[in-house]
Amino acid sequence: MGFDAKLHNVGQRVAGKAEEVAGRVTHNQRWEQEGRARVTAAHEEEAREKAKDVAKAQEAAGHISRDERLRLERRDV
Image (tube, rainbow, N blue to C red; front, side, top):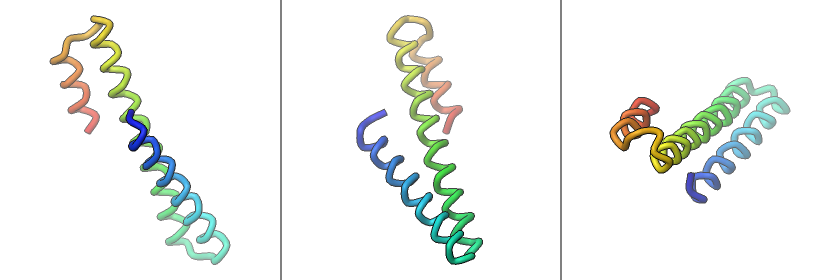
């Protein structure tokens, strides 16, 4: 997972949490739900990126083939 992707995910989590809190303070359920959804999406993207990194490490260690790694990455998308 590259630095840019990590930074983007952190930004999305912070923005989502801010939106969620703003919705809670203003009693705006839509903002609160959208904030929670943004935070969840950022966590899911981070998990996908970590899974790709693990697959690349397994390929480098010789535990899986390149074709297997690519197949796993396509399934995550």
